[in-house]
Amino acid sequence: MAESLIDKYKLEPKPTRCKKCGGELEYVALGEYKCRSCGYVEMDDFGKIRTFLAENGPSPAIVINQATGVSLDKINSYLRQGKIEIPEGSNIYIRCENCGTEIRYGRFCPACAAKLSKSLQGIEIGETPKVKRANAGKMRFIGSDKK
Image 1 (cartoon, helix red, strand yellow):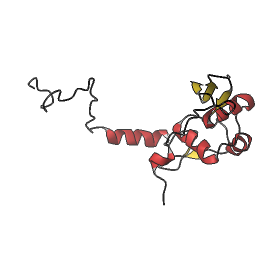
Image 2 (image 1 turned 180 degrees about the vertical axis):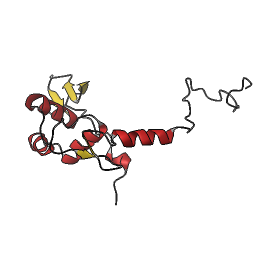
Image 3 (image 1 turned 180 degrees about the horizontal axis):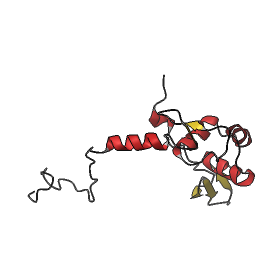
Image 4 (image 1 turned 90 degrees about the vertical axis):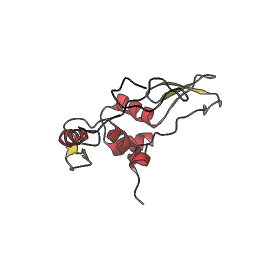
């Protein structure tokens, strides 16, 4: 069965308890969590990749996978989300999901993104409510001053 886009790009579970003392972890930044009790620093998968790249510079996904234990699927997911990117001049790139052109990060090349954006023009986009109240009002015509 094919994996849905929602499943493919869903957020990973975040660590909540310290591996050392069992204390509560507090989010610090960019995949890093710190224990409120003992100060132990723990990384989620993104934090592991970010730390590895900061210490070792640009590296192939397989090297990142072997060094951090983060799956190639997860690394590819971060590329698709634009959280990490393949450096210019690399021998290997990911491909646009629409046309197959090589890209450094994201899901679509600039040309396909522009086409997709253009196809959305003319679609009525709703407005989110500023205040939510139970039974706040009646349905009305857009642009009408009457309620």
